[in-house]
Length: 294
View 1 (cartoon, rainbow, N blue to C red):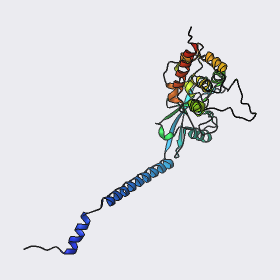
View 2 (cartoon, one colour):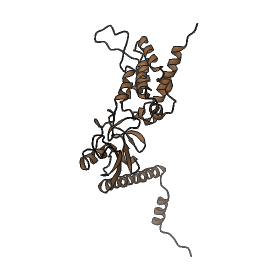
View 3 (spheres, rainbow, N blue to C red):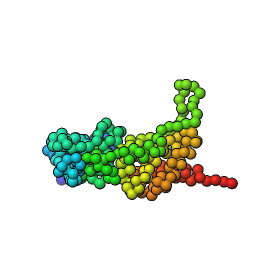
View 4 (cartoon, helix red, strand yellow):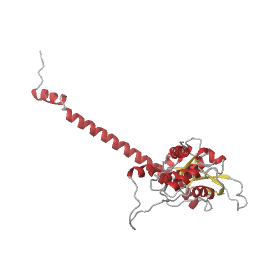
């Protein structure tokens, strides 16, 4: 005996089995979007929970030559309440304001353009205001820049670095000016692109601190100064005699030829300037400048 299936049921089963391809794609996109939203909500909830309950462990270098009992370098430990988006500079400021008002470090703009808060964080040169705590492993070890004299705590003497920068005469010089009084000293787009990255230097000295050559040769100009000289030497508006003078400065015994192409300066630059590439290009320019044909 055969069992008959009602016609209405047959039609419902048939319609359930056949789903248009367009609808399938739309359904798949809806599922993906729902999953993504759920992941974002979970991540946000996790971040909020961390900001309320967690702290970050900091080990901060301390030294004060003027205070008895603090003349021997040491590390102090701070536990700083974490907030989403908190930087190393934020954490140091919190530790200073809530634990020890004598904790000393430099900072200014907090926008990664002044270069004043360059530090040695977890074994690498970084800007405190740019470095997220969430990207670091604990304990977060904060030290002054290596290869520089420590003045107090995280503050180093920058005088030598500034002297090296000034040695390359870091200002624009030209032989000719535009005819009109208010006319611009024009530069081609191609030339602007060539020197664009070199203009981003913020004089933080992170590259100088990372350079092993600068650590062993106190007279070496260093990557920042050479990059600054590159910025002007490669500018088409600068006079040929001044370019010649810059190359002579850079070709000296403690100039570009001391660079051993270790790329450490390029790796730590907070503005992503291709410092090593610029140094190598200056070397090529120096060689071409010395070629003579009789």
